[in-house]
Length: 149
Image 1 (cartoon, one colour):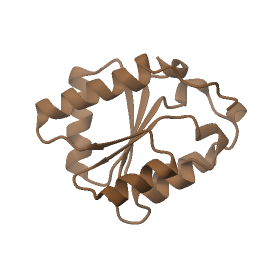
Image 2: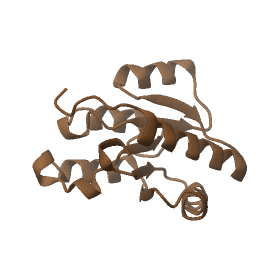
Image 3: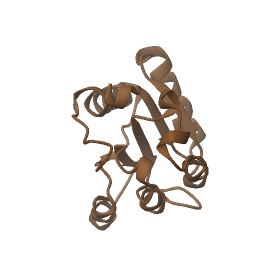
């Protein structure tokens, strides 16, 4: 797994979506550890509390962040921009997810450093297929850059 971490951070304000994702990981993808954040502000508070790589325990370091685009408060783009400002968090793959998006929103996310932009799947089977593919690619197949970049 990338950086030895099978931990996935999921940032989404919708309770029902978080619950469904949690069920998918518990039942079908138990090899990954999932940590949920209910908002961009929630994630940023966590990121800011971990200022240097030396202070961060390797087993808690996420290998992937799945970030909802449309949230109250800090939206996904604003959260992405702030996360990318921190050296420790710069190399973590971030996949933006949304029910709907404009080309301008997608382009803005890529300019800000998102690794991928996906439409949220509808239904359990599609959600499982998407989560399985995203995790396999980013946590197992992708060859990550050196943390020194």
